[in-house]
Image (cartoon, rainbow, N blue to C red):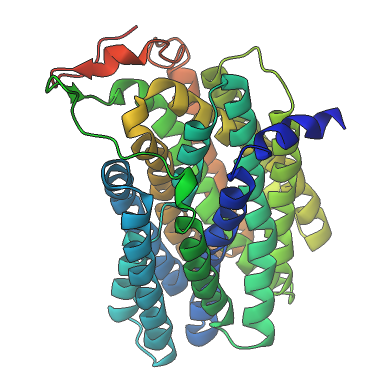
Length: 415
C-alpha cells in the first residue's frame, strides 16, 4: 500500500525497527503511571482530589527535570543517563505503591511520586534523536516522526485499558506495577542498542563559541503544548470519574483508548502526506480543532456517546504533535536536539499537572460533567496563544541555516 511504503522505507534502515520497538515498550509507562496513580489512590482513599494531587506531583517533577535530562543526554550519551534514571524511577514508584497501600495520605505519596517523575526516562525524545541521526532526508524524518507519534498513540491505546483492567480485576496498584516492569525492561533493551545511539555533542564549538538555543522561536510552541497538556491531564482524571458515575469504572480505560485510537489513525495518515503548510501553521490549526472537538463533552451522558466524541477529538492530537516535533527538529541546533524535544515534553507535562489537579478538585465538588469544562478552558488558552502568535516572525517559519545558532552566548538573531 502507498500509505505504508514510506514507513517501510524508514524502518528498513539498519537498527531502526529495533530501537523503535524497544522504545515502544519503554514508553508504556507514560500512558499508565498517572492513570495507575489515579486508579490506585482513588480506590484506596475514595478521593479523586488526592489522586489528582499525587498524580500532579509526579507530572510537575517530570516537567521540571525533563530539560535537564535532555541536556545531559546530549552531552553524556543516552545509555549513561537513561539507565540510572530508569533504576531510580523504578525504586520511587515502588515506594509510592507501598506508601499508599500502607495508608499514608501525605506527604510520602507526593514525595515518592515527585521522585519518580523527576527520574522518568525521556525515551520519546531519545528515540526521535536516533531517527534524526539515522536519516538525512527531511521527508523521511517527517515520516519517522509520524511513525513515533503513531507509536505514542499505540502506547495510549494499549496502556490505559491494561492499567484499568489490572487495577479493577486484580488489585488497585496492579496497573502501576505493570508500568514499573515495562519501563525498566524496555529502557534496558533500548539502551543496549548502542550502534544507533547518537554521538555525544559538546556544549561549545572548537573555537569556544556557545551553541545557543533559540528560545524565542520556541515560546509559541511551548504555549500551545502547555494547553494540550492541560487537556490531556484533565481529561484523563475526569473520564475515570465519568465512567465511575455511570457505575462502569472499568470503561474509563476503553474511553481513553478510543481517544488515542483517533489520534493513531490521524498520525498514520499524516506520515504519508507531503505537507505544503509549515509545521507552525499545522500546530495552530491543530490546537483550534482539538478544542472545538472537545467542546461537547460536558453535555454527554452515555459511555457510547463519549467514546465516539473522544475518538473524533483524538484526530487532532497526533498531527499537532508531529508538526511540533518537526518544528523543533528544523529549528534547534543538532547538538541540542534531545533537549529541544524534551522541552516539548516539559511544556506538555506542565499543562498535565494543573489540569489533573484542577479536574480532580472540580470532580469532587461538582461532578464529572462540570469538570469536562477544565479541558475546554485549557484548549481555549492554546487557541489564544495560536491566534496571538499567528503574525509573529518567531513562529512564522523554521530556521533554515542552523549554523547561525552558534553564537558567543547571546540569543540568536531572528531570521
